[in-house]
Image 1: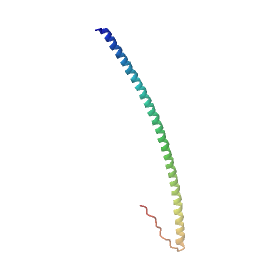
Image 2 (image 1 turned 135 degrees about the vertical axis):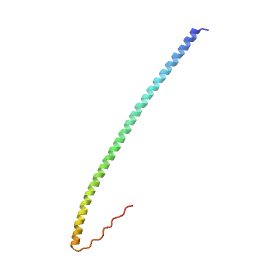
Image 3 (image 1 turned 120 degrees about the vertical axis):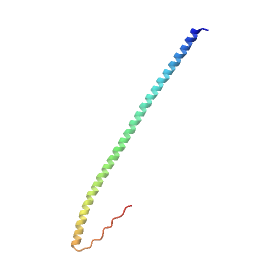
Image 4 (image 1 turned 90 degrees about the vertical axis):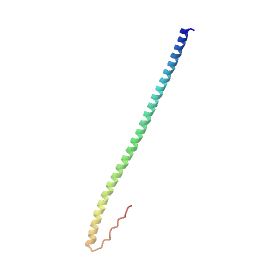
Length: 105
């Protein structure tokens, strides 16, 4: 048996196999890197969408708070006005009907 030739052939096979594994691992690393970049891009897009939606909801909430404050201011003015009118009615001996508030729930 020609041991040096067998050893040389076996070494050649191992070198080729090692090169193939190295090539395969480098392709896997490249694929993983591309996958991480894609995930980062998608995460960035999703974060931007969430920021946009949160901002829209905050603006909507602010408008509603402003509307509530405007309504409260108007309600106080109406209550003062009704108080004045009730005072005038009582001053002229006019009976004021009882106030019935609607019940919720």
